[in-house]
Length: 230
Image 1: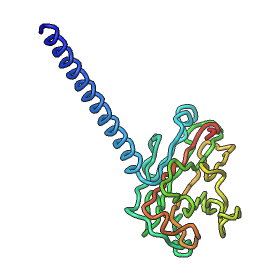
Image 2: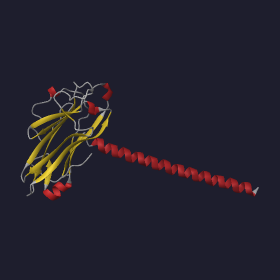
Image 3: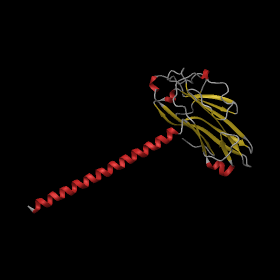
Image 4: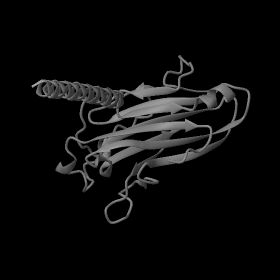
């Protein structure tokens, strides 16, 4: 009889231990989901487009980025406010004066953001600029267009068409992740480059169809002191 009581007590202890472990595992799982949700929320609530500056460019060469010529302070990141939702439009509908404003000047169904990089130091330097696709949902990159103005001149970038040819009036993305990269040399003290980035979904693209409804894309432009392999 005593043996049965001891056996029963051991079973109860094991059951309690299993329940305790299961509760702990469930709690850890919930915490992981919460952390993942927060990370994803931060990523997508920061907008579709951001700009980052390698801190070494500032610390070693006093290079800065800014979107207001009257407020030049060191920042490692700029964020372009997003639009609530994208509907497809034609590049022909874009205004001609997209490069005439500073900071955010979004329009209906497109993101438009102007900023500067300037050498406030006393040394000639070089830098790399790269426009990188961070994340894509539902293959939105198949129909997205990224127009890059630099000091008044622009080019429009797009993923290659399904037939392997460039889309109409566009320059192909360099890779699945890199839209465009450039090495800027001989950036002298006092020099500055003005950039305007425009992002939209091109309605004339055959890949702009119902399959990409509800999709998203996250892009950033990085300024680095050296080339960073993606």
